[in-house]
Length: 311
Image (cartoon, rainbow, N blue to C red):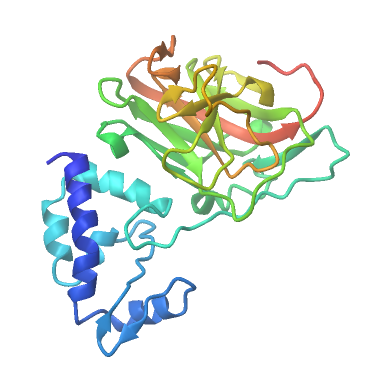
């Protein structure tokens, strides 16, 4: 069973099952009634059912009355992993889309302001799981395994940091990443020149990806590559001018009516990725190799001017 056919089948049958079912757990119906996108219950028949994100519990199709256990038993583990990753970002059928708080920037007079601070003195390590989730090539039929987490490091390096790690497989898909949920409101970075990363990696070339639209499918993403030195902490400046427009896995070509610059007034999400492609399927990442990888991130900041950081 392929990922596409299985998930398409599940997406097709879910609304029918939800409509025909005459018995729904009362606690879930009550929760749905209190939500802005809640369904309307007539007698004991549900006309529209909101499914909550599993957050490590049962997947949306496993929660369906009667058929949930059957679907769970016949769904391959890789498809379940893909469903878990998509559900985190609110992409399951009948699911309300969760959002992340828009990062609060510091004083605008500063030449560098934190967007995310994952050190022990920052505030973002504790909220990591509610903001950042894994998004890997399993969602398109690949077999890579990557996840983001908060790890302990020596106090002189910050005490804690975010870590993207796992195993990447280049034969199918070839990417692993961690991405924020879409922000509750756009993040305005127009007063700055780019994004500054305090990172330590394994020598791979990674990408920072920014999104300026609230649309998940088909929208343009803006990619910028940066290199790491194995085992070394680096401060890397990624100027907004270096981001390239990418759509559906391919760089938007010059002369295309879709080509445009990043709207720095309206950043909706950000993503850190290791991919076998740099800016498109014809542009291979020269340092990519299948196998274990890691990227540790201490801080993500907005900066203005040039403080001499590595690029």
